[in-house]
Length: 265
Image (cartoon, rainbow, N blue to C red; front, side, top):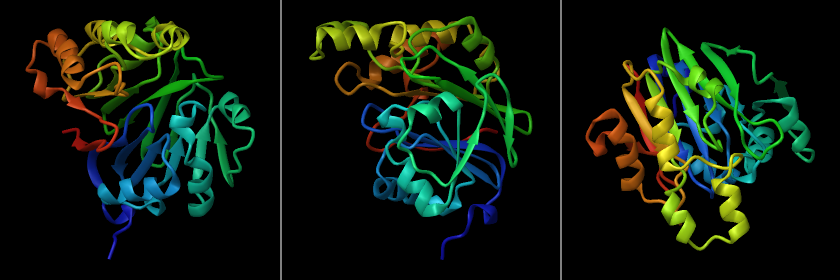
């Protein structure tokens, strides 16, 4: 028999990925009895399957948070929210962009104002991306900080300030610049992906990491890797070079298998 999330409290915060990439994204964060999912770019059926793999059901979720309206981040949300009566948290701009999203319970937040979902403190921050009102998140619980950053075209002082001194980071490493330049994408798509409202390259992610206080960092996970314009070992090498650590210490949230639970001590 499945236990509910409330029957499986965690003393510390932990996180996992259902999958990360251009074909679908979803991340889990748990603190105490609170379990939230950030984005849901998979069908409802596929989300159920991937949650089962991590030991949960959509019925265990406290809420779904949305970073922005692109399909690889919201594809499954309307059906999932209706089927399981889940509250969906998103900015008003993202909600307006999802005009046809029929969800039963909607909570709006401002991209500059923190809020609380049960035992989890949520600190959204705005990012440069080609969406209506995109944001990313820092989660806090019992003095621990988890930063999530994907779908960002460039680093900004606000991003650096928001992600400073985290205990764990899930950080976009979308593409290798040389692979993107010589890869199969059209010229216009290459400009979009590599532009200031696109996605972070491995080198840009490393540059951002170099500006952060990493003295508390227990987990670093590369996410949203392009399957055509990147390789896991390139992303790992770019980040490991900054931290002066072994490449295999850097985790990878991959498209098919996601990332198993990582616990912040």
